[in-house]
Image (cartoon, rainbow, N blue to C red; front, side, top):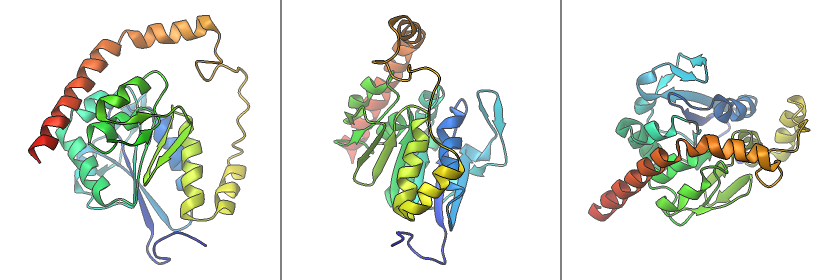
Length: 239
């Protein structure tokens, strides 16, 4: 049986994007959800401003702060996630929409944004492997799985895991056969030319290069996340 709430009312899925988002984090899931029956995907940003994502410009966006409700909230990751979670307008919209959303979801470092919004306390969550260690700052329990579900929160691991997460949710809100049909139509049958997609499988030299690259921004990112965590604790204490 379908889990859609009302056959006459479309399920609304909001992708809350921001400058320097990783575009595959949301375009992968968006491609899946856009093919579902009776679903309305909405891509939104603060004030509906265009978003530069690795050189691709996304425009014609909905103003995030003007959306009053969504059934599914999807928060993607990217190098701009720290600036996003420091933006009070953006973070307030995430908290507000999550309060009534049927599903709260993220891809990659989008889970850090969910954490900063106070949504992951005591919850298991996925994140990109290079930044997973920061989840406990927000009371979250890091999980190395590609797709992690804890209650109504579904989080995907790094970047490409967004497609896996989307197919998982698609099967739940419609039918397994619908999700399978979309997967086949997309010819989603990963067979990468190199078996280097996770730290434990990558050659040591390749892993060293990636770790060295992320290490350059790790201290700044940690400081920002620790500040966000402290701010969240203060807000929770007040309320």
